[in-house]
Length: 634
Image (cartoon, rainbow, N blue to C red; front, side, top):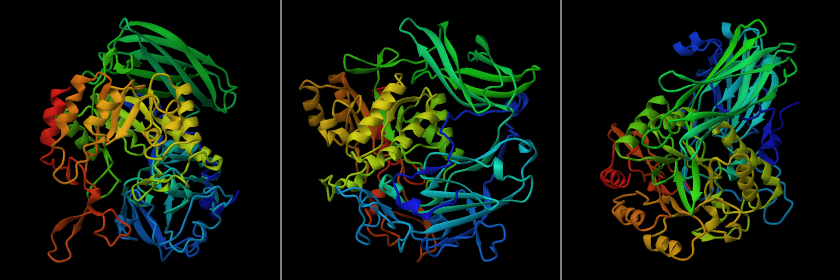
């Protein structure tokens, strides 16, 4: 198969040869590597890449992936990095409106009741920048002789991949890992990886988040090798029963070299290293393409619950042995036992009413945009903990994997949001006008959205901190999101499904979302809902909007927690200002620049600065209010 530039225009083509989404588990060849943290099966491709930026697809170096291509005029760029933050193209911030409004007329393919397939909308656009990346590499020793895949943890917005002149695959969904099998094209030495990233595709209609509109490879890129026996996917299902006992069931997808037999050991230990469970599953060599194995639910006796004040985790190990008893792979995973349910229209965690003292959190660095590292994540976690913040909504996309592990460890409950926002397709100048809303009920957009929902679920399904699956943000409502809600409810009974958009379209009130979720409702509006035969528990997915001298009314919301048990709290908008650190043109001193400061139009200007932290992570005075009230109502 050859790459086709027209995929950019087609909402029904959003992945080509991308591997199925799976759990975020780590894997090692032995316990020694696990304990040391060194993994010989992983090779990072982060670093300096050859690079060229083109204004559109027509002017890009279309043959740059060929082995004999002369790239002597290419420049260099670090990976990961937003292309704009490396000095190419314009930095642009916009909230609800699509970034091309006022410049180019565009409507989503198949919307407005027509059959327009959007031919050439992005592939022939005069302005749709393209980043052409090249990276040469040799395989490291631990990867030699094994199947090897590549993982792009995040790339905005449409990604084409070639290796050694051969087309590998295509992917959209900027914030979900995209993985491809490189094995058929690999060499031990002298490999040429070529990656083409387009700023906009049909995915742009689904990624209309309130943030700076960057593009490029902005998260880690890694190669990983699979041992002869490998855990491709795992779903561990710990249960906490009302009497304090627990049980554990699990499913595993195993692949192996053809003709190999072996066994799998499943071991569960508590925080002191005491063993609670050991199970052994045998398998023959008929699952070389990947087969599912089930460990039936095992009763464990009394367990320590995972909750927000004491996030107790158990250590699970999955070990694969070949027929001669040699250890081939070990997978560690930390799990928690908790019970989430709605009883008498009240959300309860382990039998107790859940109170959400939450924030919405964008990934942000004042110097690197959404390209952040472990250091920023750990800083954010400490800020949450010392200010009694116990919940985060991952607005409005999946975060990097380490963040979910930190939340498991520290007792932060997560509303894990899929990468979906199409605000500009239904809200026009503040009015609800969904004549060309996507995804709505358009069949041509359904599978792209379902893929985003499923990928978010598959990646993070084992995390005890994930209490809510969120279908996305501000995308109105229709048959597509109704189908997404139904899929999640059928797949995972241990969590709740959240979506605020049914407030805008009550036709789907009974078929989308387990909670009544609203944005910026006043205390009086909340009372009105809760005092008139409410159907669902109430939470605010966004409230307070900390822009300027805000947050003074927090106490009036917190008092509702004492008055209405069905009121569960909410998520402040938002955690951190989005601003970019630059050198001032006049003084030469460092300065923060917000939306509109880059001659970006259309723009919502300083609306990008509405966090309880400044962009450099300094706490704003409003944080005192957060710390006081969130501490009072823990």
